[in-house]
Length: 594
Image (cartoon, rainbow, N blue to C red; front, side, top):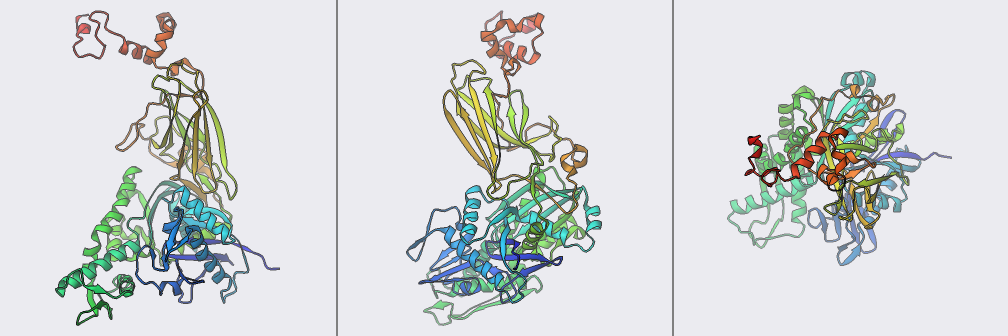
């Protein structure tokens, strides 16, 4: 009896691919043209057409739905429904049709390397939110395929890079404790992850992603600009009619020209019977590399600037990055290569010759190695007096399908005067378990619940439920037990660690392994500032001094040596004994008379 396999599945916005590790090598299940399968589906009556055949039926190119063809169905996930030629369809069902086709083609491959599929490690963009991840899981489930684990696309690419090295041990030694940046610019998204390799563990330091500058958007931008220039050159206006299928054919030529200009200085774009009702209906345009870079410069700059923002947010200079791994079709553009070489140096830029397959191969290696994701950084709660309580600790194994990692915390409101208990969830910039009190934290989100503003401190009991589900989404739910108020948030931008074979996970055992510089706990531009009024215990030192004095003045008897900060808070809000003005009133000069 044949044995089913767990595969790597890169379900991309533009193209998708299944990979399998067999005999120590990656096997990619490509289409008849030797390329990843286009993520396109066409509905013709009762017939469903997927892949390259569906792409050829595009009546008009563009993201989303055009006629009876859906291009890039991944972008529809998260919507309740959509209409295709008047027929209401669920985006989950559309994605299911694509997944079923890709699985069927892989199982029917002439190589006969794949006997069956029992599950998949599926890659996702770093900015994919919880609702879209849940919808993607539902689509795979309807297609009969179990998702063993989600993995960020750039992290999968980096894992595949290390696992494909001929001398992996030497590569691990070379990059140990060094920073690595993955720059994955594909058809749908630009994804970035900054990682550090620590004793065989790939640990994410910071992630960033956007779907505003994907290759598909780039191709549409180029197509529209070429049409505008041709109309202007020929003295035609925007009312000139265009053949129904002409834009699809032009988009294909723009995509082809973009690829050709990676190696050539010019490319001819010719589309016959493009216009309607004019003498010369053909479109021809010679596109040079310089023009391509000029036309695309706004999008290129928008995408490349994400690198500098990511590095700045992590307090990292380009010189500290040991390697920049560039994947995705856009990485082959000379303008992008040139900018990466300028920042990191040509010797530190690794542009994969398997950019179209590396993410799927990395996911397949993760499946083969049975590598589990682990939380890279604490999830913490900011408490009163600016202390932090770990809620889910770094090093915690992330749940697989059908499981959750959860905990409940019983808390108190130390200062209910404004009528709200304020929870701030945050994460240290330093990965691992050994985090210092003065390490800078990045806020994740805030929750607020109503409390009785007339109650004394610690009378209002609070509960906070925290869980990470199998979609790698953090769910937080806060409740006040007296007021019965509720608030909940969902957080998807977490960082993870992934151990390569033989990794010892020492990153979670001690700070000295991390090699991170000590950082200030002060706020940076864009940070959320919040004064927490949450306590994890009944402790009068957590109460603001002026509030405590209002009902317990004996606490401030000098013979009891009250904490200086609380005494200063009490005095700050007390009127001056001489003039009666507030202590912070600039008209009070009494202290200068003493």
